[in-house]
Length: 231
Length: 367
Image (tube, rainbow over all chains, first blue to last red; front, side, top):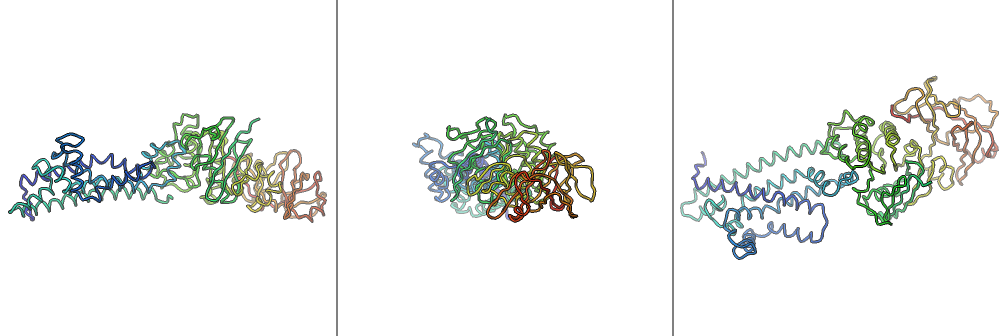
């Protein structure tokens, strides 16, 4: 290929690992992310502000700090005993932690925009809060869910700081693309490898964003059709 | 006997304090008043969509909720249905999905087939709401509310977003639904002619308070209501049956107790001969004459009756004329001078005259 994308086995391994970790992280945050987004958008409860802040912390903290925090909770001597840090699971958890706020924000914004009047209509038809959430809020906020999950996936792909802090740099276990790129730069003759993997990262990100854009367009078009002439 | 409907609710909405108690002997209670009078807020309080200071509803002796007894379930457990001014159909569900949304309450109610047939919804079932016209959507909203089998159905200006032609089309459906499913209904409107199409009492509301409650006809003769009703375009109705005669291109209506009147304008679908119809007429369009009345005039409608009551406010005088033989009553707005000149007093014989063109005739049944 023009870019000389003749990948070595180690580079392919990093790509495969990156995809696996990101998919696993996205799957891991999907349910709690959507649930938190809906909760923050449509419910009032004590401690809401605190929960909101905690969920959003990874967005503003530098990822290294997130990694250290994860290490202090899940690492050796933490409340969850030992052995969890520096595994593939740790890489997934690190990626999931930084992806979560993006999913929550996206879902929350979409859920907040759902017309209150429709919820009133559902209520007087006998639908309780939970049924209203699943039959009205969630379907109407679906584009926000898709957008959030793709954003979370893309963010997981790029995750570096928390991963290297919490999961380390173990080839085949936790050496995802960004970590592999960093490793390549550190070695004297790794420039070519770093460039190849950088190109690969850009490609994978573009493809995932493209797929999400297509999905979103379809959903938006449907939403516009459904709203057509409706107020 | 206990009233059929007992509703009360008090709540604060912005600066307006709404506290309205209503009782009705009929299953349909109309609520009438200017915008901003608190009508919609009162309904929202009854439905549980707005927090209320107190709320109580008794329908046919059954207590639906009563805040004084600590029994005030949230909106979705009150069994109170609402048809809103805007249809509020779920945009992501088909018409069928919308109709089914409220089904399964466990209360006895109409079946899907019955409602689809009554409201002519069959051709719409597979569509999304966006593909339906305004009138269709409002019919679906009504059907959806019926299928939830509410113990009390609140209609909050359900036709206000529709143009006049569509209103005429949907009113008979509403009336048919009310009759067929024996619904307990509260119907809010600021259009008197909508409220007149139900036989029930009308509650006159102003600034968050009930002014009076009774048949429109009765309210018009009360001095505390006449002015208000007049401001909003006072109308009264004369029920009858359509005859097959079409002389002069007019709709001829046989009145109960004999007599026949003609109307120049038939609104909406026309029923067959013998179909139940009603004439709508303004009191200021009725002319009174003392018999023997022998002048030659162009007026088609000349009915004999006796003066039942004369009601006065500082600004106007209204005469109630009861037609012979248990027929309906008419209202005529005349000047005080005319009352004196014609010596109009209860018991006096009088003829009521009005132009066919001054009346509107409409069907009371779905055709």
